Image (tube, rainbow, N blue to C red; front, top):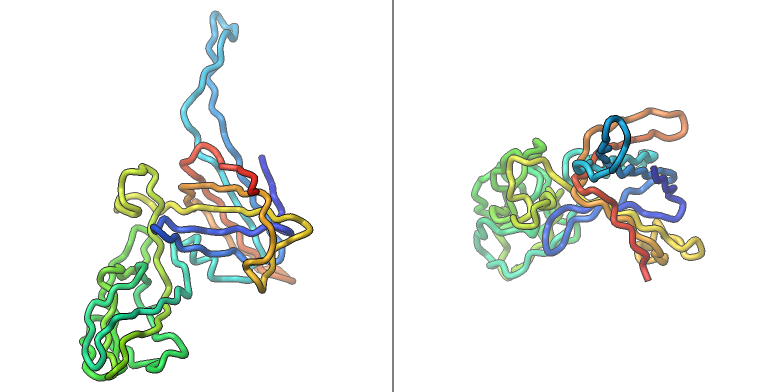
Length: 265
């Protein structure tokens, strides 16, 4: 059993998207991360006397973490596979015309796509799903479908529709991205096995106590050790209403047989 506290650590939840995975930093003021690596062993006996011990079947890694519930978005990431607030600039559009099925970099949750604040046409006029924009500033989402976790996701290739103003050829958007699964086979494209549950990566970075992480500057701090658990999946989540701070707990397993632990130079 290994337990780490988070005074000088940071936990990331990462999707299986390539080449750039979605990443969520779990924010909290106090938390624990625990994992247990099981080793099945077969006892070989001769008339009741142990003569040999052999390697048994692979066993999943058990993991859990508990945190004060400051960032509710991390709950959706672990439970539903949704990474909120993905910002993207779409360039190369045709001004003064309808742009149909404009692709996004990631799949997105139905209903979440918006024109980002600060864009010249923000907030724009959002139409019904799959409606055809006909006036500058109008946009619509394409129709999505429920993934294995029950989240209604619009594929990146389906994208969205927008009628751009004259001489405006780019738009800033924001959406809640639906991450693809890690691929345990290493042979299929991420998320290609539609019948399987979604796998994600848990990455714990341990920082130098003299150079800790910052909640303001995400580039601050020096990482000295990294724990990586691939192909993790959720088996249970719980919420506790407490007097000083609410608490959320997650537990799950990983089909990986061990946690990768490496020093970071």
